Length: 238
Image 1: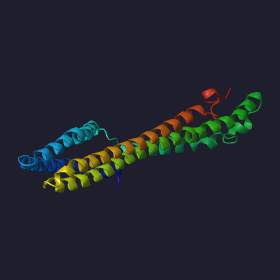
Image 2 (image 1 turned 45 degrees about the horizontal axis):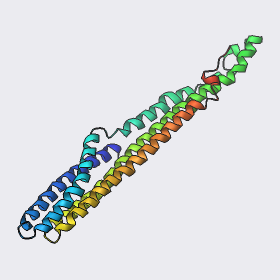
Image 3 (image 1 turned 90 degrees about the vertical axis):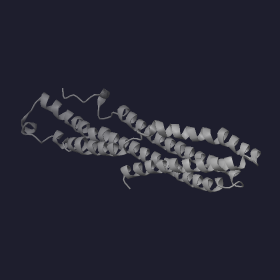
Image 4 (image 1 turned 180 degrees about the horizontal axis):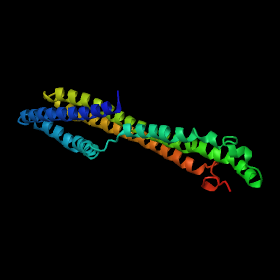
């Protein structure tokens, strides 16, 4: 399944949750109205639990989804950019590292004297610096982008798992809500579902955060370990 398809699945699951939540609320309120006349204390307890426990979790999840609905990320862009760094930067540049080896040019064999010796001595540094563009930077950046892209997808999957559990709980609660005996069990069942959804958010967000921090650490490492670049700069010939 492609990242685009996973994201579409997430959106479909959320729409299904909203539909089932509306049906549940209708069934719950209908049963409350029916029993309020002869079992008012049951209706009152169920309503109090619903309003004090279920509604806050429900609203928390709805608010979160509303905030993130259009900013779920685009991992395909991360993967595409990673490929570009490897194919358009790393491979072309590293492929030219051999040109910085003595003997590639006629001048390498005909040029004599101290300047020629100095030039030859620095060829190895130039070759290492050219190789470093791929190994040190392009590959590190590409790997970091892949980590972030994978983190976004894992984040989505955590949300989808939470939504799946929530849908099951809403379906079960709707069945409970149509009877007087089942009504008291509705709020705890729904609360369990919303708790599972929020748990999925926490797990997915934690994984995404961890992978982003790893990517950041890789980038910082590339900037601090500059053996092919003395004093943090391209080695000079002169």
